[in-house]
Length: 157
Image 1 (cartoon, rainbow, N blue to C red):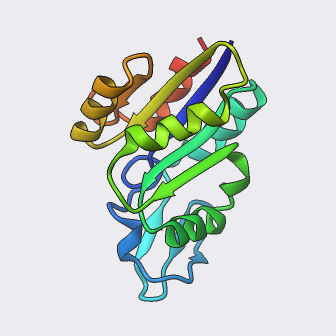
Image 2: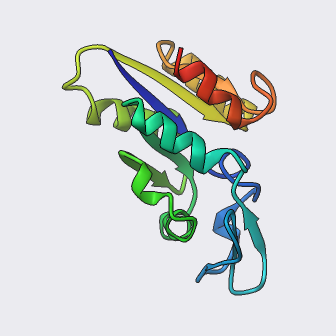
C-alpha cells in the first residue's frame, strides 16, 4: 500500500490566500516567513516543515495540487525550502483540482494499491474532488480538520 498526501498551498500550507497576487522575488524573514518584493509577508503554518519531514521518513508520497501561477507558487516553495520535500508538484492556473489529482494518481499508477488523501481549505473544491474521485479521502481544512497539522495523525495510522 502506497499512501499519497496531496496538499493545497494557499490558506492550507501557508497563511496567504493567493500567492499568485504577490510579487516575487521572495526573501526569507526567519524560519517560517518569507516576504515578497512589496513587503507582503507569507507565513508557513508552524507545523508544516516538521510534518512533511516526518511523513517523508514514513514513506508517504508528498504532493501538491494548487490553483496558482506556477512560477510564483514554485518560487514560494523554494523560498520556504520545502520544494524538495515533495515527490510531485502540480500547480496550474485553474480550480480543477480533480484534474490535478488525476495527474498525481497517474504518476504513481505503477503502484498497485494507492491510498490518496487530499487536504484543501476550499469547500467547493473538496466537494468536487469527493464527487469526481470517490476513492480519494478529501478533507476540508478548517472544517473536517481544524488545521493542516491534523493531517499527520490521519496519515500515520
